[in-house]
Image 1 (cartoon, rainbow, N blue to C red):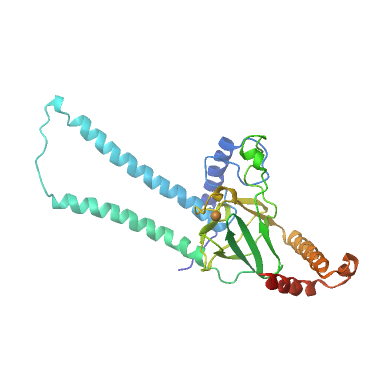
Image 2: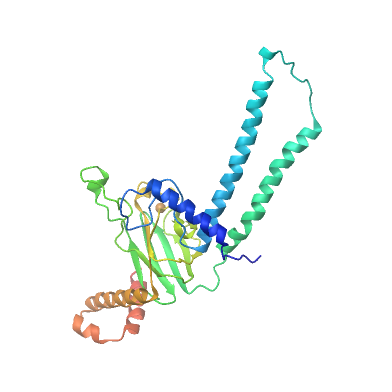
Length: 309
Ligand SMILES: [Cu+2]
């Protein structure tokens, strides 16, 4: 089934209205990340996330209609047929028409929701033709990233929380970045299809990035994949979403979406830094190191890392 993710004008307007209203309700100050509201889903940053966002409102609407109809019917029955009015209850048993009706209506509702939601779920799973592939590994309690394919191939690093322990135990004031600040955000280019292959090293974790509509369990010994294509730049925040031990709450996910040029710069810097550390390990001076081409470094770096593990 082919899904068209060009949102209609009405959908787009509705999404903007929904997100702006909740932004006004929840926004307390200037944020450097996408956590702008406490009361709603994150403002979508990809077509899939926008679809999910819209779907959330459609499904909430269906729930609301069911709620009003069922409770309205119930309260009306209780009120109109009360004992003080002398109402005599009907005395019937095994009414086939009624049983078929109350089975069929929920069945049709669920079927309709299924037909409506399936194309999006399938589109979420279509990881083909990615421009960049990044391996994500969950550890107790940090994230590991390795750029497998595409620009930046060979780069790898760990991402750990940097919030000081004193903030957690209230010895220091908490900042806006409390528990969502990390040492090395994952950096990806905007408007490029990024495939993430997800696994874990110890227990089950889950890599989740709500703003782009990704949530996938990271299972030791298995590789799962997901994809996203961020449509605007910024820092997007997720959390490990599978209870993984005592510091489960302290392994946030931070993804920095940048322009293509900024991404190229970042890759070059990252490679230069890596090269320096490889050279230091090999006992060469940093001046000598800087003269060499960058391509050599990646393979050396990969060799080194491979040798260590
Ligand atoms: Cu975890």
